[in-house]
Image (tube, rainbow, N blue to C red; front, side):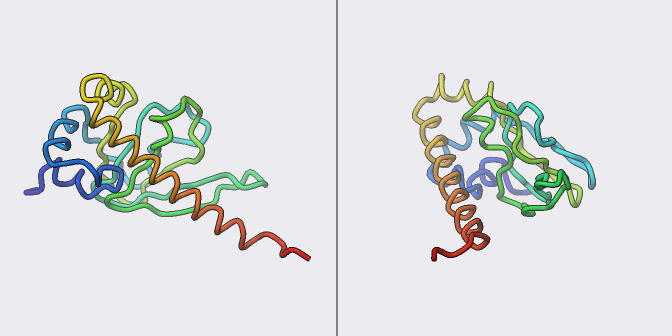
Length: 154
């Protein structure tokens, strides 16, 4: 693979406001994880303390519906992030993630992120802004989707 980790991270929306030097600094706080088809990255309700960035492959995000039946709410591919809320809060996972294909993930633990914040606060703040932007976009999409199912005003 000719693409460096920093080059790859530059394609991830959360890191879009980081320089190449910033990306080279944070890559040492991350590691690679291979997930086989059908394997869960994590399950809804589990404690979350890391975020993953999809390097290759495809993964389903699965949520239990009101009848406790699993439904796929989206499928993620290269450049997507998974579990970014784990860096912000200490709550359990809000959904499950299962690999549709063999997938490569770059993992950043909460501890690694806290080290970035401590040793490189300017980079940490840029990452927090990227996460905030992504969460805002996701909230808007969710609100739009919810509005499709709501009854109109009389």
